[in-house]
Amino acid sequence: MFTVLFSLASTAVLARLLAPEDFGLVAMVMSVAAFAGVFKDFGLSAAAVQAADSLTPAQASNLFWLNLAVGALLTLATMASAPLVGRIFDQAALVPVTVCMALSFLLASLGTQHAATLQRLLLFRRKAAADVAGALLSFGLSILLALQGYSYWALVWGTLAGTLATSLLLVALSPLPLQRPRLGQGVRHLLRFGGDVTAFEFVNYFHRNLDNVLIGRFWGAEALGLYSRAYQLLMFPINNLRAPINTVAFAAMSKLRGDPEQFRAYYRKVSFLLALTSMPVVAFLAVAAESVLALLLGPRWSGAVPIFQALALAGFIQPVASLRGLVALSSGRSRDYLFLGVINAVGVCLAFAVGLRWGPMGVAMAYSIAIYALLYPTVKLSFRSTRIRMSDFWSAIGQPACASVLGAAAVLMFPRVWLDDLPVVAALAAQAAVFVMAWLIGNVLWPGGWRALREVRALLRQLR
Image 1 (tube, rainbow, N blue to C red):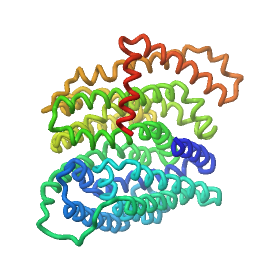
Image 2 (cartoon, rainbow, N blue to C red; image 1 turned 180 degrees about the vertical axis):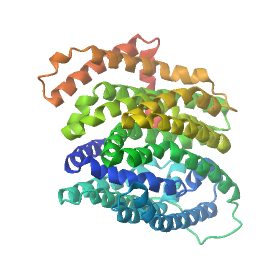
Image 3 (cartoon, rainbow, N blue to C red; image 1 turned 135 degrees about the vertical axis):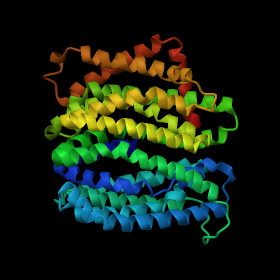
Image 4 (cartoon, one colour; image 1 turned 90 degrees about the horizontal axis):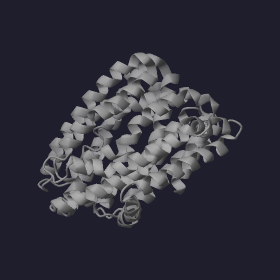
């Protein structure tokens, strides 16, 4: 909780210290560097976690050296591409930024397999400690440099410092026994699994980054700054809710794949928990977007409000829908995981191309429409060869979705005139109180809803 609050505070401070153009420049580099980032892990951490107890110390050590070699190659390749990045966006300032950001691949590769070892052994507190320390250093240094007038360089150096700190702590906290690289340790099947994961990340790159590339190229740094900040601010609570749950669930479901009914039951519980925690947050942020962005980012970012709300439509269903990939991976079906990525990438990229003519707002709306259009076929595919059914998906999200929509409707119907004369914080608190009250009523009225809420406490204890 401390890290979440600190991150929100840092976001609010940086948004006031830096201009939208600064965030836009860094977003341009990140959208291109993310292409190289597709290969930074080569799917080997997922392969190590999915292997569960069958992974030997020699195999884990070989995977570390492979990750380190890939990280070094990606750093050199990204540095070499820096002039091309500058030409693509017609921004000379991007050349040195790209060279510096390329170091993040090498720094991250140091801790990749150590993080996978902690996840595989369910030592999540150690992994969380490293992640938290890196995030705190990154935000702290970025703010300090921004105060000194370093503009977009504050974001660059903060990112590199956080990545280095996280990797060093993962190495220190992980029990991964490093050995000299040796042949004949049976890593070929892990490489095949990792290859499918990497191919997924390759096609998923276009799904995740083409919007930034297109907006930056055709609408400029300011438009991209508004879009990327709206997207990142929306994804911040989603990722902080989804990441720890998915991390634990992936390891647990990988161990349960031999018991189809337990596998199905665990999926239902995790889906309900993720929907219960993410849907009300996204629904409230959507209806209170004007107050939220005014408080966190300040008046210069008012243009991001409609973009934020359009993206929230996708964010409402996205966290629980993303469990489809976890189902495929944890059950050992890496090829289906790749197929899911192809379907998503094609559909979303087509939507980006259609929406681009209307600028960042058009891209955001097209993205949300595509997410819902692809929902049924992709979730259905992920359940193939398992006991999980579509009815499990709908029953898991029914209560959280309806209660969240009821809360959002209550805020929208609340007389706006009562909020106009209030300070931003007071208006936001009033909206939150109305939302929570309506949300609780919705859960209580749902058949068996109150009992389901009580059962969440038991699942939370298991996840801890």
